[in-house]
Image 1 (cartoon, rainbow, N blue to C red):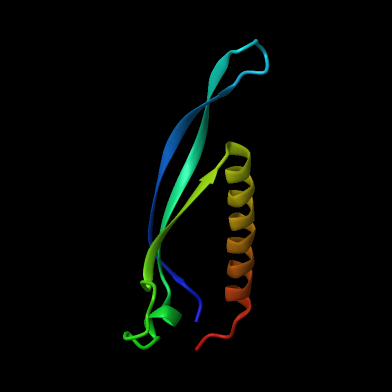
Image 2 (cartoon, rainbow, N blue to C red):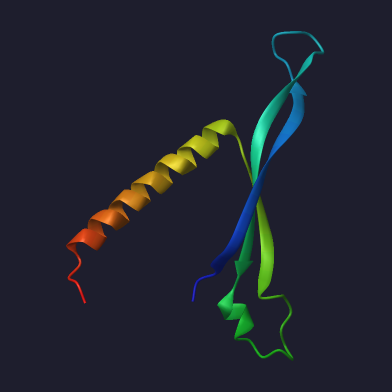
Length: 92
């Protein structure tokens, strides 16, 4: 089984980065940090006496504005494909 997403949260992080427009200058650059709470059923199925990692954990991913836009565009395509397939599927 694949890991399952239990919950998620996010926040905006502001970082100081070098400003190429001025010598020694800095500017703030926002990024989005996603915190994904994940449960891994494969780890949960392991004998607890030999288990070396928790079946639940948090994965943090930092995304720039551009990367976040790309991810959202791809999620939109995935949603559209799922909707199309759901309409074609025979009713039970």
